[in-house]
Amino acid sequence: MKTINPKEISTQQLHSYLLGSIAPRPIAFASTVDKVGNVNLSPFSFFNIFGSNPPILVFSPARRVRDNSTKHSLDNVREVPEVVINIVNYEMVEQMSLASTEYERGINEFVKSGLTEQPSIIVKPPRIKEAPAAFECKVLEVIPFGEEGGAANLVVCEVLLAHFKEEIFGENGQIDPFKLDAVARMGGDWYCRANGTALFEIAKPIRNKGIGVDNIPEEIKNSIVLTGNNLGRLGNIEKLPSKYEIEAYAKQATIQEMKHRFKNDKESFVFHLHEYAKEVLEGGDTLTAWKILLQEY
Amino acid sequence: MKTINPKEISTQQLHSYLLGSIAPRPIAFASTVDKVGNVNLSPFSFFNIFGSNPPILVFSPARRVRDNSTKHSLDNVREVPEVVINIVNYEMVEQMSLASTEYERGINEFVKSGLTEQPSIIVKPPRIKEAPAAFECKVLEVIPFGEEGGAANLVVCEVLLAHFKEEIFGENGQIDPFKLDAVARMGGDWYCRANGTALFEIAKPIRNKGIGVDNIPEEIKNSIVLTGNNLGRLGNIEKLPSKYEIEAYAKQATIQEMKHRFKNDKESFVFHLHEYAKEVLEGGDTLTAWKILLQEY
Image 1: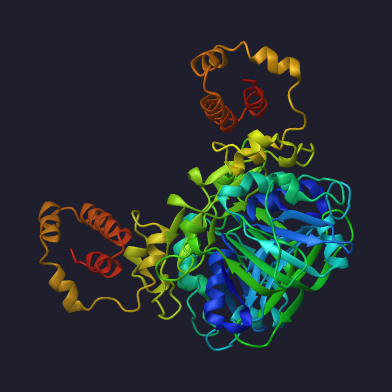
Image 2 (image 1 turned 60 degrees about the horizontal axis):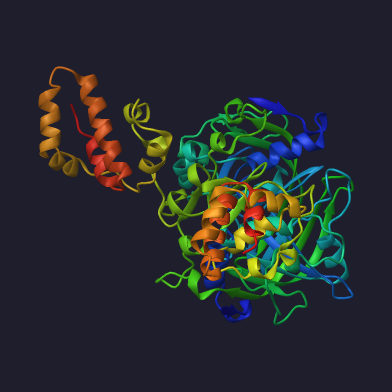
């Protein structure tokens, strides 16, 4: 383990380690205006949602590590406490990257990036017409933490109006992550496209209480076949199959064959039993996986 | 566009739309203790880094939308203002999911999830031995926004000590996203694994100032072949190739052949020229793409 005291390394190096490990980070593509109405558009990956009632989004135009200067977006929200936070999809990621260029104050990055200004309904800054979702927000507070290069400035925003493109919704009426096609920031020059095989589902265990990994029998917990993820899924079952269910499952041909094949070799029996259970478990059938694992030799 | 006033729909529905569109969200797998030392471990995707000097991480154990109850992690940081924020990789995602179960107060989710407590060096809560990175933090402030179900509670943390597994570093001494293998939350039951083909690079345009999409000639900007991403990349060049460079490039066989093939059909010439430029551009050679695009008919 590499253990680091933040006070003992350069901010630049610490910054790089933190951005490399706290990832992927969603991107707030923030549109702001100054007091004379000049528009600014800039992406921030120090961003997330923090509550839904009221709907609170926070982004941080941190002071530059390089020279401790502040960003135009921060100056703007201090002059006009409004922002549109636009969501970035893969289709516009290079235009977003271009908008992160440090153009002079007063330069409109909508123009530089070729994205389209769409007037907002409630706030002064325009939204991005191409964005799959956009949030018109008022800025409730700007909370600085520190005064030096790299210091955070929490821009706490309340969503006044939310816009979503019709095409990002699935048939169930909810937002479909494949249709959203969001991109997020990693460390260095890396991005993550949240689509394709990168997306997977795990059923929420909020409403049922799994038995926990602590209630998995030792022989199974110490299996050389099962991974931590396998144990996590096994521990998520609410109730183990009954003795009767386990006995009924013993009549399955696969189990019978295994018992016959390894009748003088318990270790091999357990190994193959666990391999079989793992396959069934990863296929999504936790109860059957348990019935397999609980077969007696 | 579906436009929504947050005050006009249920918190539950708004919550779902916001979590579906603000994604992927990094996960703080937070270890806390209450005043008598009971350990709690719970994942939060309302989380990010906001500054690096001092290093500020913020997560929000929001009030439950369902019944306005508060989470044990929030109660704990109010009793003992310390937390270890652990990073979640793919290898432990199902154990993390299991730890999100709403077990009774006093239940240790390290035990339930089968993850290993590793004593921290500075703070009381233990860290997760299996985590690729872990941050020992003091809690500077807890800032609530709202009092009802879904209300945010910003837990503002300063990193006192950072731990990184040696195996997540690449040969350049920086964290390698492929080795980190982080997972993040999407809406619904969806997760995103930041690895494989989901990861891609875009060179930062911070130090050079691209000409911008506004300075791309109209014929190219209105191309039926080039996408917004293509234009974003073209606009990121600092200076167009010189007349001399363009003329020199005209001698290339591919250009000569195209001119010959489409000598009576300017539209087809432009179409094929743009297709060729697009291929070169996506291959990473922006300057050559420009030399192709600026060929005269």
